[in-house]
Length: 274
Image 1 (cartoon, rainbow, N blue to C red):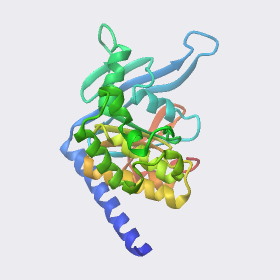
Image 2: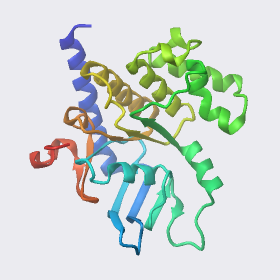
Image 3: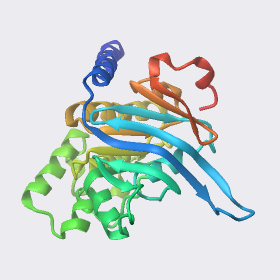
Image 4: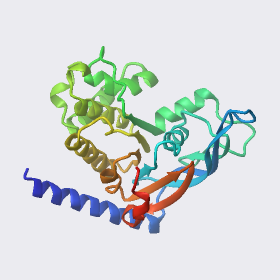
């Protein structure tokens, strides 16, 4: 496909996502993730106390594509870990699909309950894709389902194969992941994140180790699946080109939200040092 045609299509997709973002603000879709005055303090009440997140309040709705940006040390990864139930906030409320996970209740969820909710409602894509080379590409995608159910059903296997076809890896499903390029391995990770049909996908620097062209190709998949599956996607990135393609940007500075709104309206002072 000629570059001009590809850029036109990408531009149309981005425009459609901006329109969807504005429409969703008016129509108030289902809230997938809600944080209210969330704080994270490491080593509290000790000389090493470190207040990393300060009164974070935000919500993410189904179908949103959100960039989470900020300089190194601003609290992005810590916030993403709290959102994904990989870590626990010190104070504040956290809701996933309306369910109160942390807040004003007699006791929080048990670790087993948190693990179950995390596996059902959230998909993860990391900078280091954490694939298992001893297993095939297909088995890596099926891994979240294997951990929950044991042997996957024929329907689950068919859906995993469908996702691999969608990310352009249908010819590699029986191969070991260590025979794939970095970009191909990240495609496997995206398929794995979607195999449980999650309402929320969290991606921490998913293109950080990829060259520009491959990063664009991987990001195209996020845009496409965001539209087709209507899952909420929050992406941590230092790449201003990619964050600008997300309809919404949340900017952190010193553990505080300093901007939350349309990416097109993000002040230029906030785009420096991502």
